[in-house]
Figure 1 (cartoon, rainbow, N blue to C red):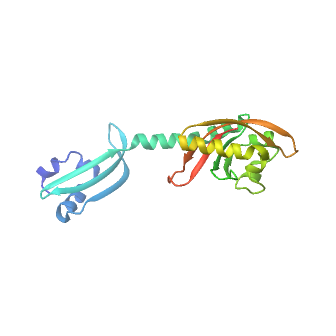
Figure 2: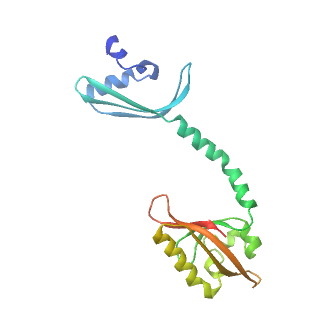
Figure 3: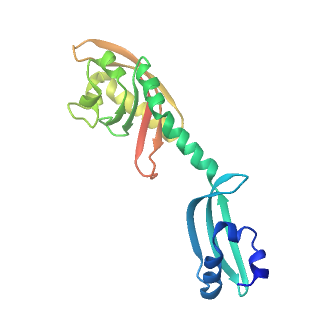
Length: 194
C-alpha cells in the first residue's frame, strides 16, 4: 500500500490495520475485528471494526464506538448487589416464574419467608412445593385465568387472592405483574410483586 493510499483511510496506522487493509484488498474477503480498546491523546474508546472491498480498488473501513455500551454494562454489573439488597428489603415478594399451572418460581425474594413461612429455596424450582400449592384452592383457576387474559392483552395485571401459609393461616395478598417473553423469545415468564 502506498503512502498516498494509506492517507485515504484516516487513522488506519493509528488503529494498526494497514496490513489488514492490504489483505482485504488482495483477497477481497471481508474481515471483522472484535471490539478492542484504542487509546490516543484525546480519548480512550472501544471500537468494533469491519474491513471490506465493495469494488476493485475501493476499501471500506466501518467502525462503531461501543464504549458507551460497555460502560452501561459495567455499571449494570456494579449495581446488581445494590438491587439485590433493595429487593430483599421490600415488604412482600418480588418474583419471576414460569407461566405454567404450578407457577414454577425461578427467582423469589426473601420476603416470601415473612409472608408464607417458606424459604425461597423451598419454592424455587418446586423443590419442596410449587407456589400454586400456596394459592387457596378456590382461587387457583381465577389466578390462572386473569394472568392469561393479561398475557393475551399484552398488559399488566393486578389481582387479589388468598394463600395458605405454612402454619395453615389464610391470608389475602395483592399481586401485580406482567407476562413477558424470555431472553430467547420462546419461553414465557411472569414477573411481579406480591
